[in-house]
Length: 122
Image (tube, rainbow, N blue to C red; front, side, top):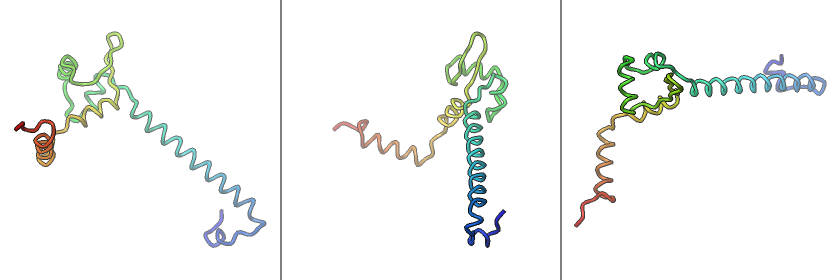
């Protein structure tokens, strides 16, 4: 509504119109932020069935493989009656926790073990 030159030189007569424009833009921003927040929260709290989980996991395991993980209690799951359900946020945490350590991380862990409580007794 106002150009950049007009924004710098708003007259007293234009003040109500400028304030109205600001209020409208703040409402739009608030709506966008609220919608974005609810979308991201819904996505992390999404429930998967067994088929959806197999499609979501990076290596696309077979259903029998996932059943094996469940039997060994390797993967987080929920069971309601006969239905298996998986919470996306728990699966994401499980995937992140299963990361192989780098050489530097292993070296640091070994040094901490030797120098800490697990050190050699003399």
